[in-house]
Structures are given as structure tokens and as C-alpha cells.
Image (cartoon, rainbow, N blue to C red):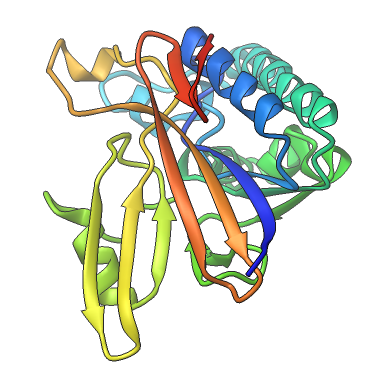
Length: 253
């Protein structure tokens, strides 16, 4: 049995709120592994400028006052995506896959409210087609390169044991982000054991909405080997203070 494909997976980066050391480390993993494919499982953008939450306690200003902040955030997110593109080019990645997150959906929701500003839709603003991504809308389950593993951004099932909720409801092997933690659950089905795994994040751990609350968030990057029969081996590398290891080598961000 041979390895058919290798995929490096980035969860929840939240540009421009990425943890720079963790993100730089993840890029170095990508360049070292030299995978055949790259997968981002969404929330690559923070979306603060178009977030509905910011207007929950204050009045929304006229559109002309919102647009400069939106344009600036889009510029910064594209700078982050450019860095991923550069690393993919160095690693000679053949395929790039994106499963859009709920934070990207905020840009689409903004365009629904302002339909004459279609350039601000996530697919357009972040140049998914031009960058060569096989991009999928928020909530869609995507089978990874014909393997027995699916991916999506996350958010359909929650709770303390959200991986178990995913695998019990879906009955397939699945990875996702959204929760920023790294949890795994394995459940027996008639067709064999199935697992669900949340892959953590690459964003800053300190968020204003947390109000100093402690979390179980972890920085991670995934390395997925897909065998010729569709089975797979998923390695979730934990990044601590911008540092991880792969194949016995320390990788510093």
C-alpha cells in the first residue's frame, strides 16, 4: 500500500489576528513536508469589520464610514493569504482546497445587505479563483482527495463533546475547525470505527470577547497521509510558543 497524497491542513488563522509565531511555524511545516495538497478549513479571516457583533451595543454608522475599515481588513487578510501562496509555491503544492468558515460568511452577509458591493463577497475579496483554490461554501462537507476522510469548517454540532456529536450524527470520518480546541472522538459503526477531530487554531489566544477567560484553545497544524485504498493517517502537530516537531526535527516559527 502506497501513500497517494499528503495534505497539510491549517485551521482558523483569523488574519490579521493570527498568532505570528504559530502561523510562521505552520508555514515552515508546509514547506518542509512538501505536500501534494494544502487545505485550509476556514475562518482564515477575522471579519471584525463586517461582524454583526460589533453593532450589538452601539448604533451602526453610515456605510461610507464602514468601508475604509472593511477595505483595510481585506488588504491585511490578502497579505496573509499571499504568504500561504508563497509557501505553497516553494513546496510545489499541486492543489489548494478551502472550506469557507462562518467569519468569511460575514462578508457575504454584508453584501446581502448591500447587493451593489459584490466585490466584498469573500470569494471575490480574497481572490479564491485567482489564487487557484478549490473553494467550498460554509457548511459544505468535502471529501478530501477521494479518501475516507471529510472536512468542513465546523459549527453544525456543538457541546462539551462536539467531536462525538459530529461522528454520531454524520457517521463518517471528519475533521473541522471553528472551536479552536483539539479534541477527538472515535465511535463504532457497522462499517467500522469512525472518528471526528477538531484541529485547533492558528490565531491569537487573547480575544476581547473572552474578557480574560481561560480557554482550552491550542495551536495546531495537520499533516494527512492518504493511502491508495482511501484509508489515511492524520498527524496533528501541536505548536507551543511557536515551536513544533516533525519526523524528529524541531521546527521554530
